[in-house]
Length: 420
Image 1 (tube, rainbow, N blue to C red):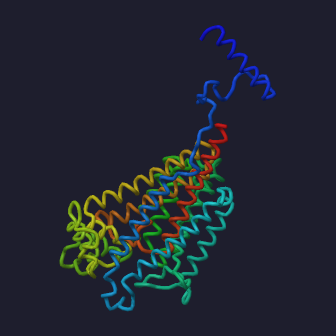
Image 2 (cartoon, helix red, strand yellow):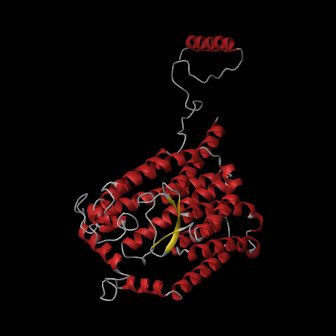
Image 3 (tube, helix red, strand yellow):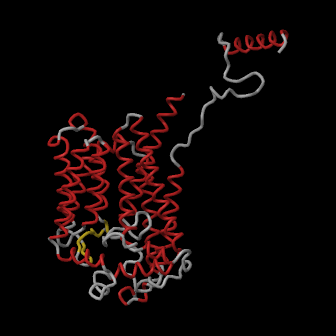
């Protein structure tokens, strides 16, 4: 640039500075029209849209598979009064209601969730007691797990998962200064989980108790409980679940059936579901028999639209479909853990523990359901999150994910303020 051009440039800067009423020489916009990257505002999405769309994808795929798995159920005399679209329409209704409640949950700040955590835990305990009261709780196949609410049956154990998660995160924040002392930091939380466990085992619902125990243990570990205390808790939990199996004859039979589902003693008994689940997945091979082409859903595989939905996916979409489901849940869990770490880095410990707790919940329950369907784990009554048929499970899953999206929204708001 020549001396004359530099003089003209300086003159323009002074003239623009007078128009602005200040004497600063540095402008946010270069005179020749190019934007200064150091001073231009960075646009950030309000929340993690990828997490939202993965959730929608799982919901949509689950809706299609629930219809496929349940379309032939009216041929069974037990469901003769139902239309072929009965489970589809009800599942679609549950999703619509749950998305509305989740949208409201997203509006609630994390500070409010933190204040309400103990009260929500107490409410969940009261509902777990209420479900055991005759004429209040509804029993199915010998288990009392549901409270009729007219348009749907609510399962208090699903609320208990979310309530224990919030309570454990709030507890660890309050006990941060004594987390190295076992009796002051861990024992009260262990007692709370034990009370929930006793109520769940009275239903009985050992699967939900396992998920809740893993959520609580995960939050204790992430909250800073030292390794010695964590492994002590883990050993106690393994011993407790081993005793539950050893002292229950029908649980022992499930373990034996899992070890040899095709034997003459188990194929038509405790191993019936597992054996037909393995047949369905084996029949699907690599690419599946095509959507709607499952044979096992035609009254061979019980609970095909709930606990064993993955077996129908494996039969109709093959190994490729099963791997896609695993990949989606793996990505979702990993993303939630990342949002939690980001919140903790911003000194939002409660929010971070909640996000990571939801990741543990969704990831562990999906892992258990997939393991059962693939024959890698003994049969448990756990559904596939976001995909299996059900009202209260879908509701609480979406509320939990909405809270994670709220955490991410608040993280981004703080970072945006920091940058500005």
